[in-house]
Length: 231
Ligand SMILES: Nc1ncnc2c1ncn2[C@@H]1O[C@H](COP(=O)(O)OP(=O)(O)OP(=O)(O)O)[C@@H](O)[C@H]1O
Image 1: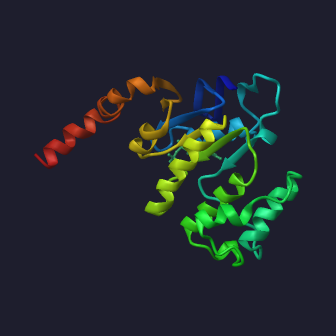
Image 2: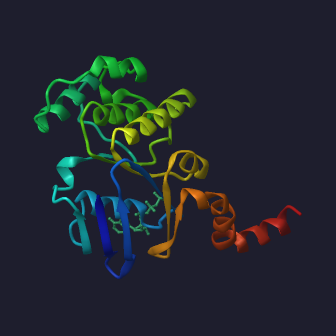
């Protein structure tokens, strides 16, 4: 299990995360929601070790180092110029000294033109390629920043099914989404970040009240203004 304890991170005088604690359990899907700028990506960067100048603690409770055991899907995947999709995935495997993977079998699902340059892919295809590079590796944990965003309908449905199956195999998955239904359909727990802290943590049995709570707490004033504009 990965534990984040009392995480604090700011940029200059702007305190983005103030005392955030959460856990990512093996074999479970943990959704992370929050308004634009709430600090989700900042939290992910601390968790994955892309940011190290934070206060608080991030550790894997059985002593495994987090980074080598965790796959990250960034919000906007980036690829080296003049690498084909296939070369990109092979590069990822070589860097982690992983054996050649079942790339073509996985790609029968994602249907990417693997022999084209990755930088020439569409935004959705880039996201699929970054996902493909994670799926062919055997990560214990996955951190997925807006994985559904930009994927076509069929890839969205497929990804949900893949995540559910990975959960059964014991993978711990942390994912962000601005589409609440995408999370409530598959997550076991959801953490709401607001004002730099955990506003509330919901178990699956409490998801029924989540949408109303979010509307109440985050948007009540805006809803009143909307009613004035569109009675
Ligand atoms: N490198 C940086 N330098 C200064 N401020 C930053 C930096 N990165 C993020 N921030 C600030 O930290 C806050 C949180 O940003 P972050 O990207 O973590 O939010 P988010 O919850 O992922 O938002 P979104 O839903 O829009 O992706 C924002 O106010 C942002 O401007």
